[in-house]
Amino acid sequence: MRESNVYVKALKCISCSTEYAYGKLFSCDKCHEFLDVVYDMESVAEALSKSRFGRGNSLVEKYSQLLPVKGTKPAVSLGEGDTPLLTSHRLAEAMGLKKLYLKDETRNPSGTFKDRSVSVGVTVAGENDVMDVSTASTGNAGASLAAYSARAGMKCRIIIPATASPTKLVQAMAYGATIIPIQGSVDAALSLLREAHDAWGWYPIPTSGPINPYQAEGAKTIAYEISSQLKHKPPDWVFYPICGGDNIAANWKGFKELEMLNMAGIPPKLVGVQASACDSLVEPLREGHERIRTIRNPKTIASSICIEYPPTGLAALRAIKESKGVAIGVTDEEMLEAQSLLAAREGLFAEPASASVVAALKRLVDQGVVAREDTVVCVITGTGLKETAVLRERYVLPRAVPATKEGIASAA
Ligand SMILES: *Cc1c(COP(=O)(O)O)cnc(C)c1O
Image (cartoon, rainbow, N blue to C red; front, side, top):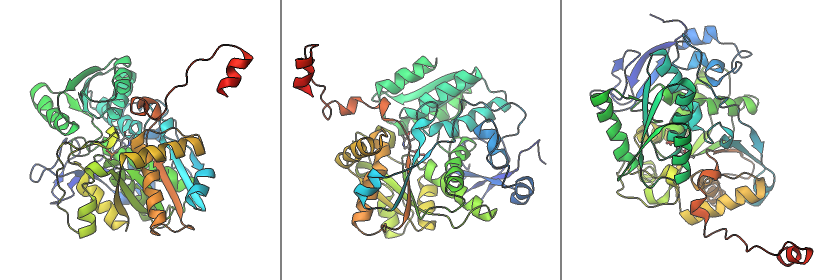
């Protein structure tokens, strides 16, 4: 039975296909895999019209037919999404590409694409009268949930590695969240969420599908927007940085939904970019198996994509494989180089984890995998403003000069 405008049929395990009713949290009880939200696509097709899709006052309103919301309460929104697809000129030239676009997710309210998923997650929580939310995060998802829970008047707790960027912690604290730094990785933080839920009822909204399958739907709106911004002709390639794997998996679903609804052409090939220190998807994709390895204590400056085991890795791996894309690992040095290219050639300041896509693109163009005529979109997931500590050595501030004409001439 449908409750108001929910078109959700069931939640279905991506591994064993067991179905669960709308409302279940966490993963499959049998195999602990990700539960995918399945829609009644016939009803969605009836309810949708191309002209109405994407219209509304919030992300949730714009795409409500393909999001797991009931619509019984106003969406919790801070003006997320609807980010520009910038045409690249000077970076495209440096790469030798004809058609390169940058999907600028740094413009979201808390500075990253996480706001898309979190707006959906907090809206669903509100519809269920939840007042107490929690997350495990490397930083950005925490800051995002802190912002949206403040907006909704909910209490927010964030379990986070103590090594997270101080700026991200301060941002979350400014929104009024309780920060719980742990002496451990984001992997440990994610498992503690389950224990906290069972012990004290904290409702989890991390941007991790195997914990909260509802928020996981939010990220696919990036695919909807890219498609519409390119006049319903998806590009040849879209590049995403991968941590848990949620964003790329959700985007693949989004592109496929549009194709299924005859609202866009053939989905693009997806490139998943990891830090080489934890490139757990590269080998399984190359060798054609699905056994994702845990990589202990990876070290990278790209904190947002630093993870031992990607919880949504299987869905991400299948997305890349089905799309005929690739996974690639890039080094810290390559990311820093790409970060300055992106900033100095396009005026877009992204964090190193986000710049990883530009580093990967450079390699794949050099290798001839991406052709110069191909249409390419790089999703620039988050702002560089929160990760300046890792740049202290790269950009040494010049000494102050006397406040005179001669003084500034000496430094110009
Ligand atoms: C979370 C995050 C990612 C990784 O996204 P996943 O959905 O976890 O794969 C990439 N870049 C930034 C800036 C992030 O905050």
